Length: 260
Ligand code: C2E
Ligand code: CA
Ligand code: CA
Image 1 (spheres, rainbow, N blue to C red):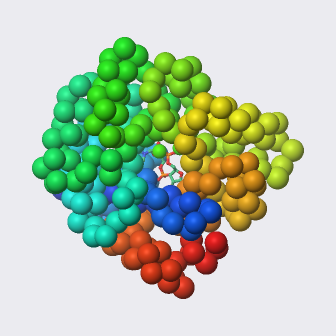
Image 2 (cartoon, rainbow, N blue to C red):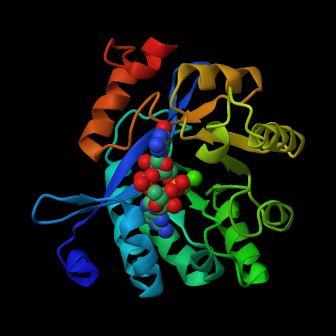
């Protein structure tokens, strides 16, 4: 079924805005896959990523996704200089120079500035060849593509990857955000992650933020970059365009501005 989905271009990028809670500005977005089936069903990634990974179809799906994302983002006019779209890749993809070569080629084909694309690496599977990963990552960074550690503290390697690989951003997982305002022991881990992130001079993005109380708490701790339903859910490209335009004109429809 995945094979047919690939052939029929049924894998579509959705985009979830990332907002600076101090300024209300949209600083970028994360690209999240959705499978739009011909019968109208929309399948979330957790239902197919693992299978696509086992069957190695994830490589083709990611290539197609990069095609669509570069086409979408390069068509946006008047974006702030900082704006970027991040894509999710598996550690294994980052161990392969061909991935970097193809990515840089695609950006140049679309005449899209390299810094408009960022990479998120999930810890859901481990790195197997740290030396190669480091080389590929350094090449991407030298070409202005930032690399973010996703789900930090929840999977393999965790903080040891941060010591060995050139990440510049930490994405704080929803698991830790959910502990804000509770007595959960993981609330201490959240504070430890934030302290560590500050000391290591990493940019931090809080993910899965659903309430204003959470935004407020994170702001007090010095974490301003917010991704979560409190501002916006992942949305198709057309809706992202409307969201960005509403944000730019400080329009009443801009939720991020209203919350600010
Ligand atoms: P992720 O990279 O950690 O992405 C964040 C997930 O949290 C997304 O789920 C997003 O919709 C969800 N989320 C964001 N804010 C909130 C919130 O406030 N509340 C709640 N309840 N959820 C929130 P989604 O889109 O279902 O994606 C799940 C996972 O699938 C992603 O987790 C990522 O690991 C993977 N994934 C998505 N797209 C790709 C892709 O292109 N390639 C790969 N390899 N993995 C992908
Ligand atoms: Ca991610
Ligand atoms: Ca994550």
